[in-house]
Length: 439
Image (cartoon, rainbow, N blue to C red; front, side, top):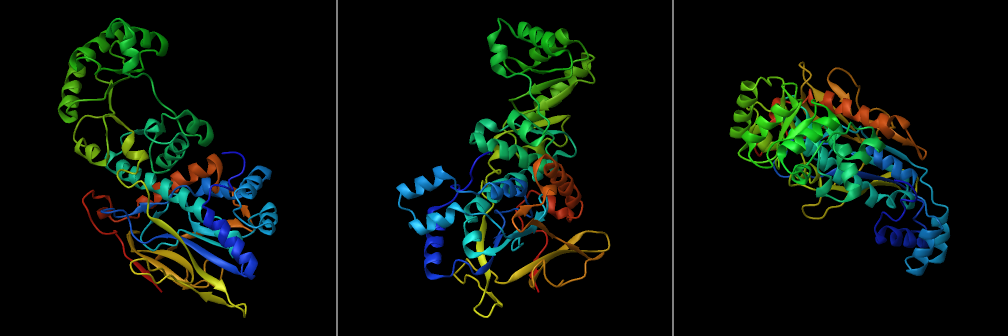
């Protein structure tokens, strides 16, 4: 995204700043925290995604002439506040879990330390990005775990907003997907792209054979031919006859997949196309992928389920003020006490306790000096630190942004999955796989 990100927010962020500037509290140093009170129903872990995108949006959070004029016309804030907004730059610090990290209820995923006015402005954009991207990544990670090493591609652009599609492809790739059908995601984030032909291409031609011959002529025999436009068995026979036994793959987008895939594999082998792969793409989610674990499937393509978080389109994260400076300059812990919406006040650090087999057993949140203060714990074989500095005095760490940041997050997620107990990967409903405790 280019241009200003300043209006990617809710009106009440600006009206709070307006009132705080008027009463003199706007410049109190404050600490806001993004966290999830709970995981989506039945989930045993979540995966952080969107951090790199968020850091870039924070740097683009500027009120240019067009934004200021809109606010003036709508009488959103006073003229004095418009003058303050014209000079707005985020100068604070951001700490958080690395992108690709696993998280659990209460994990302090992101902390923003700055003046109240600078930090509160970012609430909506923080939650917009982390809720959507982490939802996709968490669902995608479950799909990857049951794919058992078979390639899996994201192809859900037509099932979500055009900009969300790019973010979803990015999040799915971080979670372990191998490719996307979305070309803008490929260009922006360096994700491998894939895709050959849809049913419309077959229907365009006078016969299925004519369509296959034209595709093989254009793309070579290593292409993937879609064989279920008419009759699958006939489509497979035609595909091998046209492309030869070196046909790269056939794609199946309908039918009772376990039965169909087994029949197609047997038919391909009988025709001598023993190396031709089978890709399935029919309304898949983690449950249908798991059901195909024993079938001779070589690759999967997932659309709607992955870009919508497989039934949980938002990760349930919230953004709360947890500490502020008092009149004496000392930090004061603050927390919301509403029924069923409790938060834990204070500046925090976090670590994951690992046992002797390097298996995660506990998420420990230390309430005290925060990640930049005196260490509440000694990192070592038992405790793995979880929080890193993402922004220092308004400048994002380039290691976590751009295409390099995506690749680093993808690598980190793969490493983190090795730490989780095996129970984390069960699809049945269950509680978070490790507890979160506060110290």
